[in-house]
Figure 1 (spheres, rainbow, N blue to C red):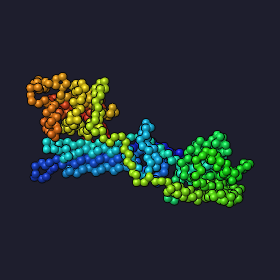
Figure 2 (figure 1 turned 180 degrees about the vertical axis):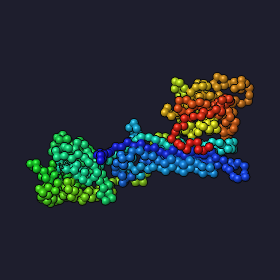
Figure 3 (figure 1 turned 120 degrees about the vertical axis):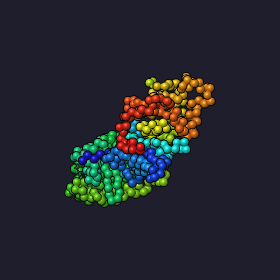
Figure 4 (figure 1 turned 180 degrees about the horizontal axis):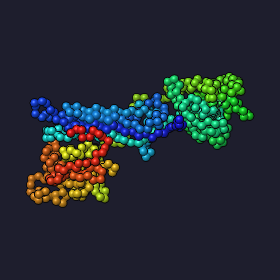
Length: 519
Ligand SMILES: Nc1nc2c(ncn2[C@@H]2O[C@H](COP(=O)(O)OP(=O)(O)OP(=O)(O)O)[C@@H](O)[C@H]2O)c(=O)[nH]1
Ligand SMILES: [Mg+2]
């Protein structure tokens, strides 16, 4: 089995839950006339949340399953029943995880136990017709759709690479040892410099899970660039402790465990910055009779230096378990000593939470594009198979001033208006209620200057009074035709005789099988 050897970076696809749809329903009781609207709201979709968990030390889990999804919100139902809140998905990440977006942009540096980041926000639930009812719109025959949740690709990078680093001469058995104590399967061979890049293994000893880095072999002069040099020691800079892996069975002249240790320590000192790390010594290859003898001879010397010495054999496994427990207790002590930034519980949210009433209208060359948090959200909430819902959308857009702005910028009837991101915009044929040039001339040729109210003004007032029926009639948008993919219909469109036609196919090939359920 190929186990990733050095996972300090994973790409993760996260998807928040979709909001449940609102429902349009009318209260019914035996022998009683129709009651009021009683369609409940859809529940919000669950969010995907990253949370720093001090017990998590690796990103391995995400390497194995890089797609994570939170729960969808439940749909509303009749009798004022609201859909359930989709469950959030909390993804534990190690302290010091750097979160980046798809293009490598920094989204967050997650430091401190409990720090949270809502990386993908769940979609809002759609309002049911009970919530959409007002004194003027007593029985709405439509409801709002739930919105899709955020979906994005992120990368997680772990700066704290390993809890413990294995250091030693080439062929001392560092890779063999990491293979004996974890599921890592690095290359092992009887020639020096087998390991060219660090390997990472995850070790479990009792309740403690920690990571061990096996780095390329060091030799005297590594600090001057001999051998592989010592560049890769930066990978163990953040380790809490070091384990000296020493070959007791080396037949090279001049090699013995104590001198080997001194050479490595000398190189570490030249590299600098690792002096304060606790050390363990693993005298390896004691399955070899000569090795065992030599180990016995030097144990006392090394212990006298204050070092904890373990006699091990990566080959037979003897002593390995004891070594891992000794490593675990150092890791635990280091974790306990680390200043824990507990209880800060910073919650990071990407981007602005709400764009407010802002929207932009830009000319695209063959039409207009409207961008803005609200217009885009409203479009997503609209059930385009329902005329009344589409009319409600037109009312909202007009009330925000979208139509007015389009007219002001020179949009004329028949222009294409796209609302939203190029990938999933909804296409409209512009049909303003107010006409720039012909503004003063009413639809039927009367000069509005001679009547007391102009249609746009009266309509706006009516809308402001609460989506009056009059406003709906005048400002309704009607499904007219389908333009390459997205839905197309008209904004405005007061008394178009063809307005009632509803295309059979609205292109909702979407993933939501429950669509249309609400009516
Ligand atoms: N008999 C015996 N041989 C071992 C033991 N551990 C490692 N070896 C052998 O020693 C040789 C080197 O082992 P590696 O694990 O590749 O050593 P390394 O320290 O990772 O070497 P580099 O990656 O080159 O720095 C291999 O032939 C292993 O089979 C052991 O406990 N007993
Ligand atoms: Mg190796």
